[in-house]
Image 1 (spheres, rainbow, N blue to C red):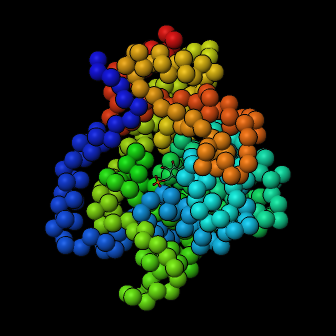
Image 2: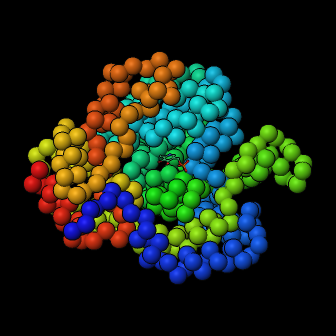
Length: 364
Ligand SMILES: Cc1ncc(COP(=O)(O)O)c(C=O)c1O
């Protein structure tokens, strides 16, 4: 048996190789590579899939985040509430605008503990960033209720949540704006960098469109100081192909997750739980164990690769030392950073490989 990798992106490419290659050739031969009909078609398809009125394609998930806060008017002196175990890009999206992240500990589903949000609200709080980590939605009922009562904007980070639901609605349909990354390893992953926002607000949509193109609505007429953040035609075309298969890809991941959940049985391992009323895209299958490093090394010896999402919480990363946090400030988050382990999870993973992972873990 060959080594089992934590993730494989080549298998999905090979599964739909003819469709991807036909689309790539069509775009290459079209002679039009930026802001064309591939992008506008994909934007329509993505908005319709998620269940919002509009989508604006951007260059990355990080761009989607920082531009969202910028256009919602979040800046210097403002505070944004975010889970402390988020990916670093979530925090950068806030701080790139000069705003301050206010961290909240995660719940038993690895997402922000919504019951702890209200105590963090101050007169400076402008927004909540709901990061749907590992493929599962945050408790959006509670978050939207808090936001309404305190007049806060809500940004959803759906980078890892392409198509999952909470109480019958898809991730991305709750907030003022939702941000997506199409980084290759994501559910609807591109073949390079890419991102997008979705929203129901036509004014906001127009401002994103202007901002992503150097702040111009009309060629050489610059309305605001913007950015170059456009999802290119090649990626947009390839994403349209991927999107057609996203539901079947998500269903396959759910089967893998189900097999892990039914098969893994070890007294030192806690398996991921799904919030009542929600489903997961299983972007990652993340277990918790106090013996994480030992398990990781043991699996490595058994030819099984795993990953840690994420080993250093943002408040302890060097980049954010200026915020003045120290070890012990967020004990649940810090414990999670020491005990989470992402098992191999990718489309095209064979049943034999899944069973081998289960057997090796149970024998640990
Ligand atoms: C939760 C989350 N937010 C934001 C990002 C940033 O996306 P990108 O890599 O496209 O900038 C990522 C992934 O990389 C992510 O996982």
